[in-house]
Image (cartoon, rainbow, N blue to C red):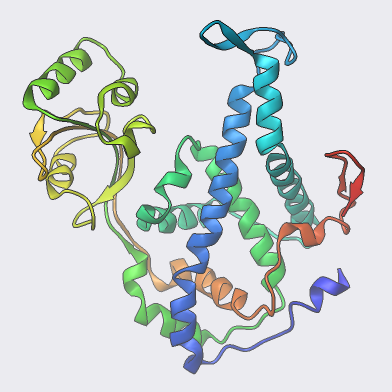
Amino acid sequence: MSSTRNRRPSTTVTPNQTPLLQRRLKTKPALAVIAILLLGNILWFISWLIPNKGQEIGSDEQVAAIDGDVITRQEWMIAMEERYGKETLQNLVNESVMEKAAKTYKIKVTDKEIDLELALMRSAQDKFDTAMQNLSVEQLRQKIRSQLILDKVLTKDVVIEEESVEKYYEENQGLYNTKTSYRTNFIEVDSKKAADEALGELKNGSDFTVLAREISVDSASASLGGDIGFLTENQENVDPTIINTVKSLKANEVSKAFKLDNGHYGIVQVQEVLEGQSFTYDDVKEHIERELALEQLTQSVTPEAFWSEFNATWYYGESKKEK
């Protein structure tokens, strides 16, 4: 691990560095999380493709047909492996390596720390809603845990002055006061008649996400079963009528039809409501210290840098590869 230690020199952050750090801190965590969540989506999709117990992956089960031409499960799985196999396996190895690193370097990640990161992520949800699609809470928490382990290992020798942490918190308290957010499904149709017909189907037991895929004219959300992520009050680029309607609903409630600014009609369903939170300095002190410390690294370091230390061997592909 000596080479890795050379990338983590003891460093002191002074207050006059804060403006630059402020600009970088606002983007780096979000980008890192987006990458993590996108990999998580791949994992979810692959796991969804795995057949039920007792069913052979290489079976001739038909999964689709086009004008009589059949696509089998085996063909489907081979195509998915070619497209996502490497990234999925790499993510699994990285998670395992980070767990080994946590034990070796006696790094602890608490549920409270994961809760904090999750809350801060949700406060900026509009930046990576798409990446979160189809990712369970437990999968998301595991991704956050792995990232925290990596960050803690990389920054454990970096020294940050408390004055810098306090200054950053004072100048950016808005980042640590999260608004109440509403995870929302959305259907948009051309007319009031179409909206009323959709409401009738929902009252008769139709699934909101299935119906959104079938009839919503908002193509971006329709492909996701109507999921438009977490909405907050006064959120930019969202029709205010949608926000106001969502705020009046409880979790799992479906709205009446309402007119949108573009003349179409909408229906929303609230999946869950996350109450806003205010985090004190003590709540986020370690979080800020860690992010400031990460800015002191001379180069970007990923979990792959630890593969050789923990004897991770790569067999995927045509030739054996060891990192």
